[in-house]
Length: 206
Image (cartoon, rainbow, N blue to C red; front, side, top):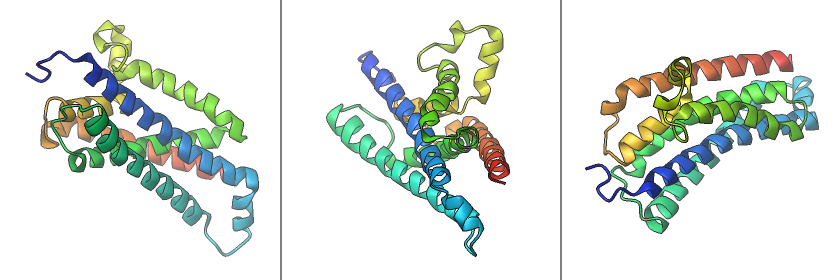
């Protein structure tokens, strides 16, 4: 059995873990990008020999490295040691999926940074994007309880793919190869969001 003791706290704890990753993955890069816009750093770099693209890349990579470190520490210290969840897969197998998911949240962060004009608008825009993602993720509302048209929309939710992959790996013990179809979906969604968000941000920055 995947969960012989019928422990609800395992599913609830993992869902909260995945949702915190999602929120941090959107807010942190967006905050860094907006902060540079408010300080006028990007405009100054446009007038210098330095590359704006390189600055943005450094900011995004820095936030991804920080978040990956937080995910790793939370996985080991909170999920395994403090909560003592009987996870079937290790950090080395889960972390590549988390990094892949961060690409989709970074793409959403570019979209947020493209629309937001001030630092204070980031939270509001994040909630506007996160609320539908949460509804379509299956973490709080089972997909079977959704209308048919909404159920079909869950296939394009990166959080839905991430939760399905994470639960299948950590609770059911599925390997990456077993989740190849969902991994492919997550790769496609992440690529589309990164390209779309990056192009829109570049256009807004002019």
